[in-house]
Figure 1 (cartoon, rainbow, N blue to C red):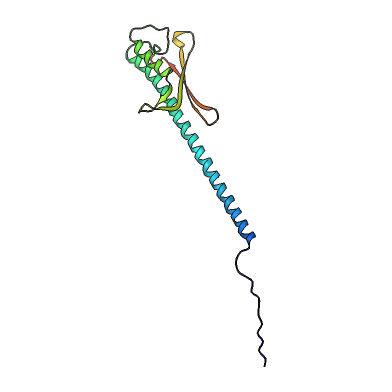
Figure 2 (figure 1 turned 135 degrees about the vertical axis):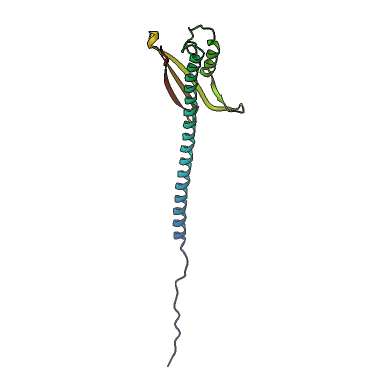
Length: 165
């Protein structure tokens, strides 16, 4: 009996260069998509935060104008004396100054005095000719710069003499 020794060639284990390149391309594509998604979510979050802040600032403006009307009522002054430049009644000056400060505020400041990116403007429109049906429309607009252009939020409110006799 003759024993023969045969040599078998075994296939080398490991990865071919092409397989490595394809897997790297797939991993890079998945990571790029994930980074892009995170970037867009972060950008949307910042836009929403700015929009919500602007809404709060516009709401503050509307509430302040409503408060000025009610303050005039409590002081037994004409309800519209803070908004109507044609009303000259003793005691209305302080309310007019407060509204003018609100109306011409422009760039908003933080508590520590640093400027924010938000700018607020206020517009007043008198609706109705007859004094008993007269209304005042207050429109508060808050705007802020974007990377390209600006964005703005506006809130309007009709003020009336709700304490009519």
